[in-house]
Amino acid sequence: MEPLKPVTATTRILLGAGFFALFLGLWAMATEGGYVQPLFLASPGRALAAGWSLLTEYGFLGDMGMTVWRVLGGFLLAAALAVPLGLMMGAYKGIEAFFEPFISFARYLPASAFIPLLILWAGVGEAQKLAVIFLGSVFQIVIMVTVIAGTTRMDLVEAAYTLGARRSGILRRVIIPAAAPQVMEALRLVLGWAWTYVIVAELIGAQSGIGHMIMDSQRLLDTGQMIFGIVVIGLIGLVTDLLFKLLNRRLFRWVAL
Image (cartoon, rainbow, N blue to C red; front, side):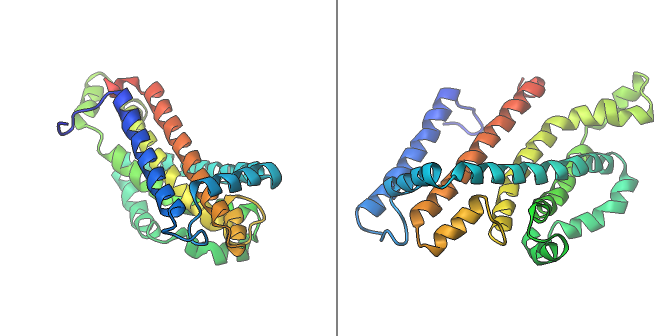
């Protein structure tokens, strides 16, 4: 292996699958070998059996769908506000000077700290859960997009002026196309964070969702169901991450050249 030298797609898949196999082997060895009691950590087989029971007897597909809807709903609302604002802040330093101090302050506030207030304001329904995801995502997206847009190469801007572009067109014709691939990568990262916020939101006052199922399983001391719920979150996150990467490659083919 050489530093920064890419590997082939086949090698990447084999290495990634190899780590998963090693992880499952160590997990099975620890649980099936009696090193860890089932009360504290269920074996892979027991977790799979518990998951099958959840899917066939307890309507877990509905919980999965509800959680996905909450994540996407809160995340898309945050992106719809944060991406345009971040682009404007990155392009125009006066706008950045106006918004940046407050946004830098707000992004350090944990979304979970707002849950009591959000329950007071919006109850324990869907609005509260969407608001938690929104607050946890929006300020992070704004800052990341601002940094990306603000680092647009000045030679591209100067070339646009030379070719006759006006000030009003620089944002649309230069900054947005230059920043778009990295903005998509930033959104991919923040979507992963949104999953942590939705589980926190579902732990309190929820009647459905993966987080709600995990809390119910904790009361029953069923570590198999808890682990299956956690694994499902990871698998859904992995799928959405891969879809983001695929979309990024399709939309911005020149980046990989």
